[in-house]
Image 1: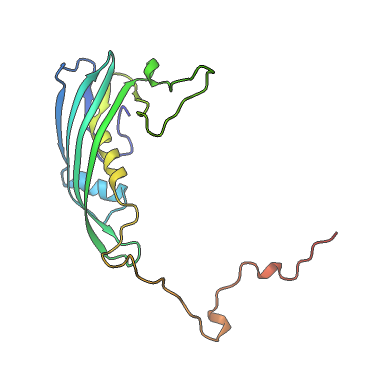
Image 2: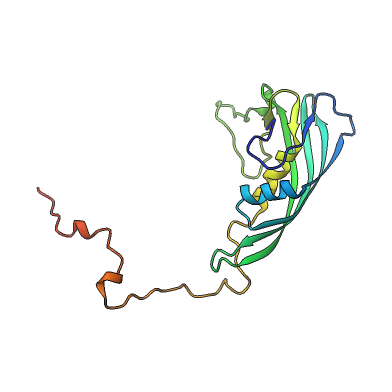
Length: 187
């Protein structure tokens, strides 16, 4: 995650000589960046986007990024397609290490097998060079916090829509298995 080629936000930082107390980074998306966020994440609108991050050294060469992302967005209801106002609040706590670091490798047990625990800590992500893109990190957590199936209030209990076709055969959809009705297997 050294640079944000595909994203809407980019805030590259050199992590080569981070102060021991770290850096505080505040990102507020301007109108152009909010439009790009809207288009890339298939939203109707991004009214606001703010990220407050703290970037501190971790162990010898690693970097820890902690903070929050807050955004006001407009999504489309998956049932009615009507606009829905939504709030995105995401917590960030992730670690990055150089790509050649032994800390980026998953832990192995005594048999040499990879140990993955759903409850355990995540393996650090890697970066190359001495740059880390704080904007890309904030955008990634923003995307993960967006509700993938937004529904307008009161729609949750709505019955499914049933389409009835008239007696006219021209209105009925073609059965995809109709071609197989006369097929017989030869034995």
